[in-house]
Image (cartoon, rainbow, N blue to C red; front, side, top):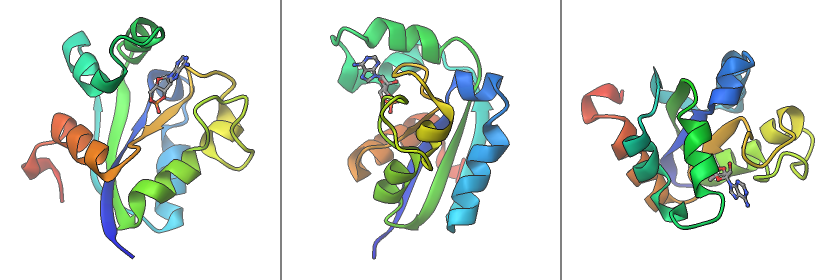
Length: 139
Ligand code: CMP
């Protein structure tokens, strides 16, 4: 029962569609603590660092274009098995395949514009949190 922190990000489509409150609320109601929260518009440089593991893949340019297209809301959530549980809560990458009841299953119909991101491992979480939050911004 490891207490972990993970990075959850409402993507530009989720912000544009007014889903920020709904998404934060789901993590709070699940029992997670919000340890950090901010709205920002990613620069191309930051986006390329954030998604560096996908560099060279066919969808990389479209992904960077999309994630820099408007503000995102990034949050650090903390709790038991946060990395795994947050991934279960957001659902499969492709909104058309994500199960109803998951965030993408309920709100997404696309693989690129899929409303929300959550770190896929403890290592990714540490990297992504470090890119978006300073120590002083985490409570
Ligand atoms: P995310 O969880 O933010 O992690 C990487 C993102 O790349 C993913 O969500 C999708 O939005 C996008 N992505 C992953 N695979 C593909 C793909 N095959 N085609 C288009 N976009 C993809």
